[in-house]
Amino acid sequence: MIAFDKKYEIGEIQIERFALMDSLKRYKKVIHNTLLYFVQIVLLLTCKQSTKVHSSKIEEEGYAFDSEIGKLTITSDAGTTAWRTDASIVGKKNEYLSRYGYDYSVIKSVEVVNGVKYIGALAFSGCSSLLQVKLPETLTSIGKKAFSGCSVLESVILPSNLKSIGNGAFSETGLKRINIPNSIDKNEFGGNAFAYCGSLTSIELSEGLTSIGDGAFVRTGLTSITLPASITNIGQNAFAGCSHLEIVIVKGSKPASVHLNAFNNTKFVINNVEGQGIQVPVNKVNEYKSVWRDYQKYIGVKR
Figure 1: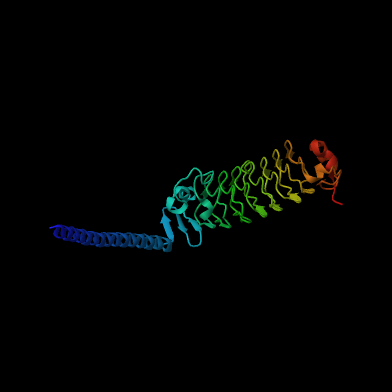
Figure 2 (figure 1 turned 90 degrees about the vertical axis):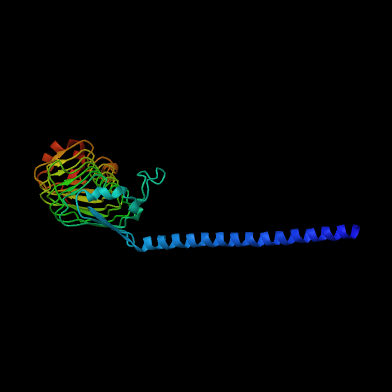
């Protein structure tokens, strides 16, 4: 009887062991199938993402973007600013990402097509990777801070029909040279238009240009500048803080209006170079000294 009980107990243990093993097999199969399911999902998502990356061109009303080369093409006035909040280009807004909340570093080049007349305020501001810009001859106006903060943008050709440059339009850019066309209307050369461009060493002001805006070239890298005879107004702080500016060559026989601090903290002022910093036409020295009183000690003729 005792032996029978033991055998019964052993048999019961074996049954439980077999049941346990069977359960483990079933659990393993469930786990395997679950893992396989997740792997398939991951592969599917990866494929979709890969397809999205290869589908690099985005086209919307007023603009298009090719993510493979980082090229933004603008096809309308409204398109100059409409792209800035397009999540498919700059991602979702993130307050901690930048001062603008979007990733504008994806923009490497900009082409504004023929027919566009106006570039809106802040249009390309903060595009820290922007290297190339192509502007059409139809363009007549560039808005406030349109290219501000484009730190690696070294050159841009302004169209010959441009009439207005907004405040700070090219401030804090990497520009090295610029040619200002004579088409700019009086009082339409915005304040601080090229301010804080430390690499800007070459500026050509076209004959026919009449006015230079307030702070237009504050703290640029200029070493010399020629003011055409057509200039009648030089704004407040126009060349202030240009610590490398040694010579200002003035072509006009009649002194332009010079506003407060126009040439303050330039190199010739800092070094107190008398009779050389501002070079005016022969026989016009006294006339310039009587009008440009704040800088009369620096006025002389070309030697």
